[in-house]
Length: 414
Image (cartoon, rainbow, N blue to C red; front, side, top):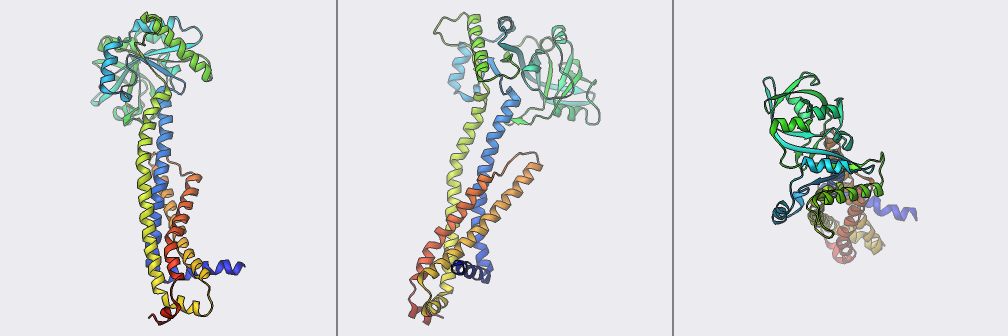
């Protein structure tokens, strides 16, 4: 029995090895198809993980934001115009009111940002993200301070001219020096660097490493009163669960409605952006990519099946006399069928393995370049299954054709 099972595989191996270029063509087609499917799935998985991690870096995993308009990227232009007409600006008075009635449920931090140039000596960093904030923001969000510290409440109250800078700013302005203790000029004023952020990466194509953080009072003294604030908030609990987060959001919404004197049933005149809502923009993008990826992968696989089918058909045609001789001396149709299917499956398996090996190399290279991709075992499993299935599909028609070869005609073939 074991010999009967191994015989088609051995025969397929000798047939494939006797025509290496033809076999290489079929295996390459499968490799390209499998690599396409695997890299698309791996990339989409990377996008999803990136959405979660980048949203956590930008907002905090348990942080929500109150703002005049918190999600302009997820609404139409008309909806944005309506919100700007309906929603008043968020002021420092709003922030103080929320903070006064936060109780033990919520912790608030105010934030405003604008673009501007940062100068140190003869060096300049253009279009940095200049942020004014309250000291509490450092406890609400993980700002990733790797050197020095964030400014404290007393520095916030005094409007001290101190700053925390991002990695891009430090690299551009202090390439060969420790930035801590150095002075940068923003808006014509000098700010002493007291902290350095770890490298954060990108969010939505924008660098998170070009920030300059300063106390809100110092920001307003430099640039004038903020047009509108964003208020970051999180539960006061050390490790909040879903119930604590929901309670904090409810308290913030009720407090803001009370501040705006909104009647029961009236629509909110402010926005609340949760981390899930922030991630949804990236997830919707990944879903759209996924919809396009399915037909692309399917077309690659169909093209591979056609190439392998033609390859095996050529093999069957060249072996017509051999098949006729074997049938004449007693070989059964099932044996011929098994050998042809084994050959196509062997090419598909080799191609699938080669395709996955190529994807593994791509993942390793991107990881070295700072792009985190993971080739999961499940992706490898179903990719190999798709390769094996395509091999059987590609070999079925040539195998059926081989079993129907007339013995007399085959023996006359050259």
